Length: 102
Image: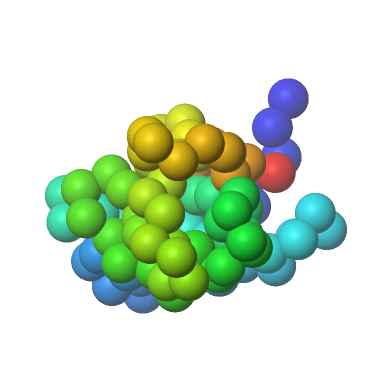
């Protein structure tokens, strides 16, 4: 069973931007797409640990600011030819509020 945590109102996360959330398991990056979808990943690139929350969002992918690895929001997988995975956390918008499951 998931323990849902309220993050913030959706409009507090800029479109194509992110927000960091601290949890017992580390920092989580919560992203907002141009279509107002939200996704959450562990805020650490699987390559060299760059802060994904500082990366560029395009579609449903974030590009790590350190070495330009692209990480998919839906499954946390690096886009080929890179290999690796960031932990994915379920995320949703309900009543204009963003929630993540820990």
